[in-house]
Length: 277
Image 1 (cartoon, one colour):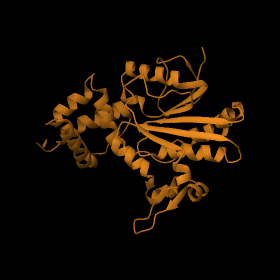
Image 2 (spheres, rainbow, N blue to C red; image 1 turned 45 degrees about the horizontal axis):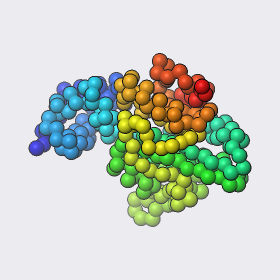
Image 3 (cartoon, rainbow, N blue to C red; image 1 turned 120 degrees about the vertical axis):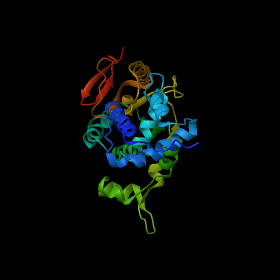
């Protein structure tokens, strides 16, 4: 059963809710695109009307589906080195600090939670690869998780359009990407970078998470805005459990831990450090 046409009034209700909840602004001209994406999702879960789907995602108990809807909307909203000042701070300050504290055999573990199409974990991998080029005996891995299996498949392929030329520094582009032959062009992540990243499906609402840790750093950017206050606290408890002493947590630029968890200290805008008990 098809849900019919999404009316302008219904679309405006979704737009307003998405803007308020996730800070994502949808233009009036994207109504048909939004309609197609949501209609496919509604068919998957057996919801017959846009009104019923709106009630589902706005309900207090609809956090899981709300996250799925917002992720569908957000696909294409990410890029390599998004929030470049945060990446620069991690690369120039935190990764060297972590390496200095490690023993001779240096084990680095990072997590991109909500990795979408893979740009974030591959960006992290490039930073790690660059900062460890002159360091012997490094065992580095980036865990990249998402709830959307389609996004994970795309991320795992590591193929991106020519727009990456505007997002990735030219040195990194030549070092870590290979041009794709053919009329559409684009770039493919080289195997030596790809092997640093492990992609897995994970629902952040299903704690405890199936990882042992300890993690040196976690990117949880523009993810918690999808969840209720109590869900955010549960997620942060897991992050605190998994992070190594002094490990860092990166949030999105508009996010804060104020009133959520006092076991992290703010060290830079949207970057926190685990406070040891």
